[in-house]
Amino acid sequence: MTDLRNNEMDSDLDQQNYSLNSNADPKNMQELTIYNVQDKFQTMSDQIITRIDDMGTRIDDLEKSIADLMNQAGIEGQGQLPEK
Image (cartoon, rainbow, N blue to C red; front, top):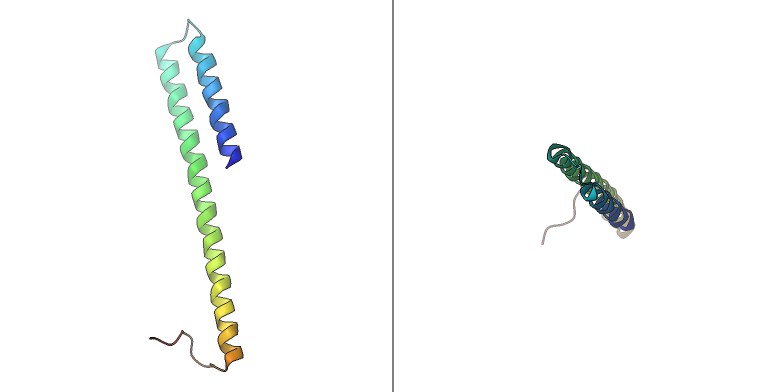
């Protein structure tokens, strides 16, 4: 999370430095803005995918733990938890 904030601050500083240039071409500024938005979007997408993968791993571990507990409790041969 800190890396994302640092990246945002760096890109904001880059934009400010770029905008201070009096010879800045509006088309170049537009391209820079689009690039920055795409970069932020890609970073956020990567973080979301990583979190989804981590959640999938946690769910798999939880299912394994539940199966182990069911085996220890003597509930065998049932692939699912009993319904209420």
